[in-house]
Image: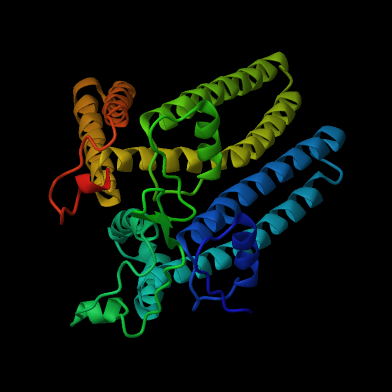
Length: 372
């Protein structure tokens, strides 16, 4: 199997090819774009789309032959096909994870130990909770630039975890210098969405789809809201219509077998549609992160904020469950959580460019005002 060594700007086609060529390439390197394209297509879109197709196929066979005939053989073959494909994709995903972690500066040995811990987590009490928390932290880890965790001064545990500059090859081919008409120089990062000034509807939609995995750029208020509102409204209308159609179909067929057939077909089509909408989920996250960076927040600050919001949500659910009983408390707690989360996010997403930037040159949580 070919060793994958990605650098620079990675297209979707190259990321797709690298995933399959590097199915067992645990020792190479993958860029942020190469990693997220792989996760997007191979871990979400293809498995859900394939599962949806198999469910629809089995629903059609069930409608033609009933529980007898070839239904059970087709069901068993479908299960085996999905199992084999899932195992292959899981192997490729682990290899992709190793390459991305190596690209940010981690050594191989701690990654192997982490995989063993993840596989054995169910055998030790409370370990699944710890693994889940660390997995959330890993979302941030795989989103940082190449060489982010390469450490100049190492000792003890850090030496065990991270590469040193002497052994790590840095790639700077995304960093270029452009000359302005007045003769000044400006550092530009290729492959990123960097909106400034007035943004038209055309540019906003272009940046939304072109920057589906551009988590490191910036989007203005106009660039965010002009596209976000339209996409969100359209998705809500579509899913409401689809769920309404499913409910009507189920109640239209009182016979048990007809209802089951309708349910299987609707479930399969829903999975296929969900897999098609996964890229929109990534695009929504990307444009939101770019908007918050344009406000002046660093990526780690965003994750800290979302973590605090998650803790607040849990506290609210506990309070309502204690006051109104579990079922009613969960309903009211969820309503309050959704409302609070929406208000907080809307406030931050409506702030102007650089509103939370700081004058400090070495701030760990906020961007410097000089960048704006």
